[in-house]
Length: 78
Image (cartoon, rainbow, N blue to C red; front, side):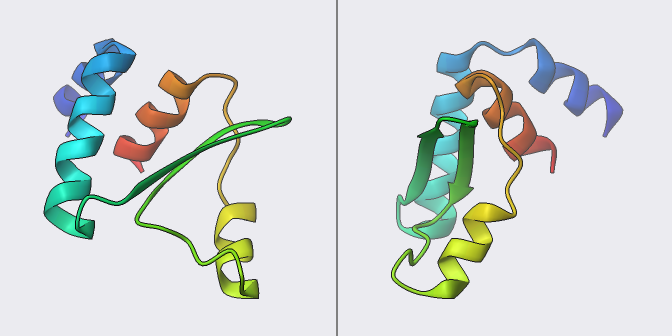
């Protein structure tokens, strides 16, 4: 697992996006959500239901990252 984590940390944003897209296709019918807020980037597999409290809580609980790349690294590691 440590070797995989190290490899993920070395990947550029284009590679990470490609892998995220492949995972979304396999697991969530192609759905992945990338969000940029004033506090930073968040990434979640699937499409959160932002019309309900459940989806809003899911998004609020995600850690914000200063770059899309950092958010994608976090997405794969955790």
